[in-house]
Every structure is written in structure tokens, then in C-alpha cells.
Amino acid sequence: AAQKALESIQSELEKALAEQKVRLLQATAAQVAELRAQHQEEIAELIKEHDQALIANENCLQKEFENRLTNALREQAEANHTKIVEAQKEEKRSHLRELQKALAEQSNNLDQVH
Image (cartoon, one colour):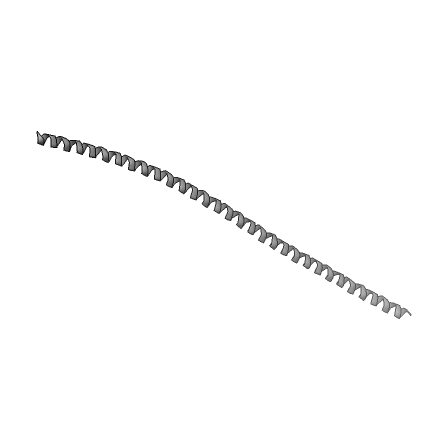
């Protein structure tokens, strides 16, 4: 009878141990699921922050490109203006030389007439 009682107790303990293992596995699975969910939220937040940083960097690069382009265009416009002004000055000088030459010829002609 004592043997049967021990076997019964051992069977109940094994059954309780199996149930405890099941509860422990369920609790562990629940914790793993919770950690995965937290991990996914953290990953999503990191991706969001990374995307925002990329957008900010892209905006900064765009602004820098626009500034450099504006400066280059301004410098080119100034250089073109300088060339135009110099060409106009040279044209005026050339015209003045022609006028001086014509005036000198007329002066010579007048001198020859007198």
C-alpha cells in the first residue's frame, strides 16, 4: 500500500512538474513575444529617425548645391559683364582713333588748301 501511495505521489508530482513546464514555456513564449514587439517598435523608431536624418541631410545638400550654383552663375554673369564693358570700351577707343585719323586727314587737307 505504501508503494502504491509513493507511486501515486510520484505520478502526481510528475504531472505537476509537466504542468509547471507547460506554464513556464507559455510564460517564456509570452515574454519572447513581448520582447519581439518591443524590438520591432525600437527598430521602427530607429528607421524613422534614420529616414529623418537622411531627409535633413538631403535638404542640406540641396541647399548647398543651390548656393554653389547661384554663386557660380553670379561669378559668370560678372565675368560676362566685365567682358562686355571691356569690348565696349575697346570699340569706343577704336572709333575715337578712326575719328582722330579722319580729323587729322581733314586738317592736312585744309593745310594743303591754304
